[in-house]
Length: 357
Image (tube, rainbow, N blue to C red; front, side, top):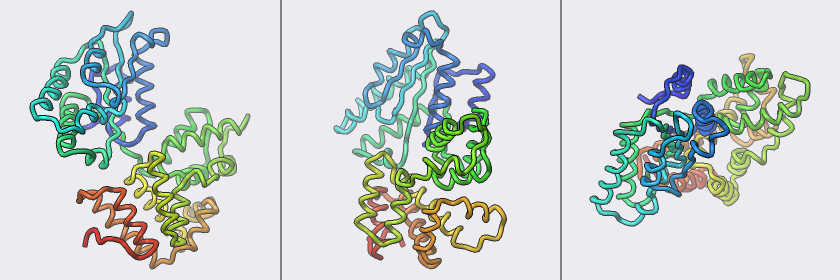
């Protein structure tokens, strides 16, 4: 079973550091935070140039990785070698059809080191995998990636960096503020999660801006976040929802394509859209509980306006389509981007290809 980031941090706190790690999952901020801690524990600043190596999968190969990992550290007990975007390793070679014999040799080269890693090196593979990655390229390339990943799982200590739930993201936001000697009100926490979802990088950025603006004050309130986090054009899920609500297909597709070009993954966009529409549905309903009243009063004005764009019946239909697309992404070979485009056609014009019954 993969470790959670908390479990790994407890091990590191006890001085239990392995020689092989595999970081998987989509939560980038916690990955970077954990890598920083590993580096802090293993590498002194004055020896970083000699004992820390950062490689990228698209710009390296197994030969270079293994040669670097086998190099002895300089005036230190350990060397840290980090391979980011490890999912891109060997992609250039794999796009051309490769014979099974050559694939087997590449995997054997990797496994030979993994079986007997250098005791002086902590080698960490960082994967940013998603469904689109696993489905990319030729069948040979896809099969190879799966074998490669399973091989790493077999020999490395895997740490799974899954996206946090909203409740855990709220707890993380409070803890992150406290680490910097600030407190944040419950309304402030809800405002950030409502606006940014569970994107810890975005939340940390907005908190950092609030720290700078507060001066001597140590308590963060909604008003301290509205100045920057409230600039909704930076968060295109609002724009996409606006376009869908106004039935503007061309605009919806343009926003979707821009989000993908900017690095957003189709499945991440689908999840964000679903989460955003759930907030709209909650606001549209009768707010009975006290915390829902607080949420309504602190929700961004843009979100409140979007409530009027959808009837209850429309929202029910939208959630049904979202469910269909989510299932199709996980059970068919269709590209997630195509499925999202089809979803927008359905929501904006009532058209689209029937994906599943």
